[in-house]
Amino acid sequence: MLILKYLVNLVNMYGTSTISYNLGTMVGNGVEWRGRRAVSTLIASEIVVEETRPEITTLINHKDNTKKSDKTLQAIQRVGQAVNLAVGRFVKVGEAIANENWDLKEEINIACIEAKQAGETIAALTDITNLNHLESDGQITIFTDKTGVIKAARLLLSSVTKVLLLADRVVIKQIITSRNKVLATMERLEKVNSFQEFVQIFSQFGNEMVEFAHLSGDRQNDLKDEKKKAEMAAARAVLEKCTMMLLTASKTCLRHPNCESAHKNKEGVFDRMKVALDKVIEIVTDCKPNGETDISSVSIFTGIKEFKMNIEALRENLYFQSKENLSVTLEVILERTEDFTDSAYTSHEHRERILELSTQARMELQQLISVWSQAQSKKTKSIAEELELSILKISHSLNELKKELHSTATQLAADLLKYHADHVVLKALKLTGVEGNLEALAEYACKLSEQKEQLVETCRLLRHISGTEPMEITCIHAEETFQVTGQQIISAAETLTLHPSSKIAKENLDVFCEAWESQISDMSTLLREISDVFEGRRGEKYGYLSLPKPMKNNANLKSLKPDKPDSEEQAKIAKLGLKLGLLTSDADCEIEKWEDQENEIVQYGRNMSSMAYSLYLFTR
Image (spheres, rainbow, N blue to C red):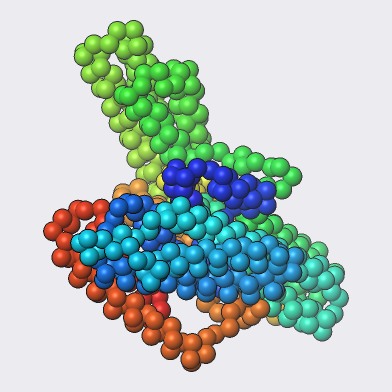
């Protein structure tokens, strides 16, 4: 986030007293700032404050003897006024949030007062009407009170950061409260005994889920950590799909209250939704339940990437790490390749090639260690060249291993997806259910279980070669979905087979089959994206699979929305924006007249003009 980057700059330039307080507040609150849109109503005002940051930096870094023309002074005055106006709008929204959150009202209001004071101070320090220091050449020396500018900039940074951190706490509280409401309603749904009561409660549940989807979706967009963003996407995808499953599974239980498979089917949906809800809260609060840590193993591709970085570091530092650590790291990587070589679905040719490349990597590491030891004892040109050759050899072997693992996993996945593209087993389960054929049900349930195990194992292999953390998370999500949904389809099919004339049981089975088909489609997309990343056709950022599109309107958060400016205010803002745009053009013309375009003052002026133009665009 730009504000926190600016925080670091101030630490370097002016010391740590004010900054340490802000960092201490962040740690004390247990809140990490995760995005620029913690509260939707702060979007516009925060952007304006961010746009003024370079101007504030310019004011702080000015030369004491800087002389500026009258036009430049007028431009600086306008920028100072724009900063003050932007801060004023920010404060207005902050105060509105404070009024809706009494537990944080005092803290937010104090921070808003400080921000307002800082904005007014900056406007005053850039007001040329207060300056009468004419020089002999007709120019004016401005900003002699550099200490005042620094103090105002510090205060503005500190207060804006406080408001944003407090707003972040507001959003976290909203999401937790929304989750708790959903859980409470789910508990009522689990105990419902009549259709009429179920319809009433489920209607309330639907509204609460929509609100939770809005809040968690906004938070997902705020997240800067791509891994966390993928985890949030996966959890929200589970909630999205399980909502429809919950409807049909619950209705089936109400229609057939004594059917054990129907109850098992419904309980599976409730359990998965509760886990997904807890996962969202875990991501939002950035803490693991009961102090748990992430024990998931590192993928092979990630391990190879880190190993190669370690051996390449030997070019600069022969004592970067121990030889034992390097050997252990390689063994851990090669042990994970056993997921490929031990798989019943890996072809004989791929298995032999993986084993061959693993053996070659071990041999070349021993050669590297031997040359490495010689290089530490005697530094000669020939030894350095031999070390470089050893590094290149083992890097090449690991690259070949990566290619082989990628080929093995993607080929297996492509063949599996193609084989099951027509969903023969699902169609057969639906037919046997309608026919009430229990014997055929057992046969096809066994086939679906086999298919499920194949898909689960394939997702595990794809995770190893996915190449990015977000896609690793997507592979894990796909693996879990196949594991859970496969069993739920079997229980839903069993219910239909026991009650072949039940329309709701048939509808329920259809919903679970559709979820399976949807995950197959997502897996096909994931496979393409993994190949694109491996071949360098795409970057690491991409859309997350099965993720609902972000919703633009949030009808359930009316209390946090600022009042829309009336026509008079809109006209005033537009007029100021137009003036700012014209001023930008004037400033650009003045800058072009300077002969030395690399001059520090010219660069500052160009930055100020650029930021002023951004402010103008914002007001349009």
